[in-house]
View 1: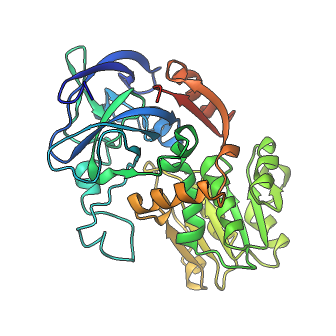
View 2: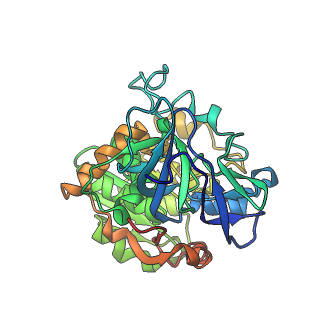
Amino acid sequence: MATAGKVIKCKAAVAWEPNKPLVIEEVEVAPPEANEVRIKIVSTAVCHSDLYHLLEGMNKDGFPTVLGHEAAGIVESVGPGVTEFQPGDKVIPIFLSQCKECRFCKSPKTNQCELAWKRIRLEVMAGAETRFTCKGKKVLQFAGTSTFSEYTVINQIAVAKIDPDAPLDKVCLIGCGVSTGYGAAVNTAKVEPGSTCAVFGLGAVGLAAVMGCKAAGAKRIIAVDVNPEKAEKAKVLGATDFVNPKDHNKPIHEVLAEMTNGGVDFSVECVGKVEVMRSALESCVPAWGVSVIVGWTNLFDIAIPPVHLIFGRTWKGSLFGGFKSKDGVTGMVKAYLDKKIQLDEFITHNMTLDQVNDAIELMKHSKCIRAVMSVSQQ
């Protein structure tokens, strides 16, 4: 392309400081360096992890930054040493690396990559290097991706090539939320046919977990949320029951125990609040129940009576649904094209990058499942 090797000036939503509206700015995006890919972002969605960094974590060292990590786009140019991608490829950026060379990548026991958190410092959710500048200042790349921009530069180990027939305004959701929830049920919990499940929190991740429980053959899937408006969407994606904790005068785990003869076989927590994590664990049957923590928070500790585990429950965590990231994304896109998973049902709003603050407000107040923003034309 004519822009290859040159600095690109384009539009991006910059978060200059915590807990403030994003500002649409002209940014400069440098050419990709060794092992990097510059991507034209076509569609991106707002995920709660973006809100967590902006409104909850609020580490000042993590700003200014360009948020966004759930997206899809087209390769504009590649840096030296890149052989997997070429200009024109459809791709999905991923916040979790898969280098395919480290001991974690080579192990079937995990989807972690040893390079992932060397590239990105968790406390600021960005790496030391960035290809963004704005008004003469360095702007960080959130999660190593920064998709609230018309162009971004990402290391090739955090980019997945996808089917050229994939609709980018739909499959962008596979870059985080849908893969995270679906995989938590299928890969991490390993939900079994005929089992009973409970999913706590019905945002995109929770609804995807419901979809995963159904795909795994669960006979009963209890969706738990304080927002009754989420009930119908949950049932469309496979839930058999909906429970609102506000409708009961006893702890939710006691309600679920009464509904299921002592507790569910599997529970998936998709809220990111430590009190809900404990409730999800306590909702499992003591003898063999498996509970998976998916919701992200790093602000609080959690405490439980040891007997909750001694009696036989298993407590697990899941990042990106346990998928080896690049391989998993490619597979999930194929599953969507083969009509084995749903995506369209998650999209409640179609917007533009200029409306990013409106999209954030919708998510902050639980008024959307996913708002997909058009960033660039294909």
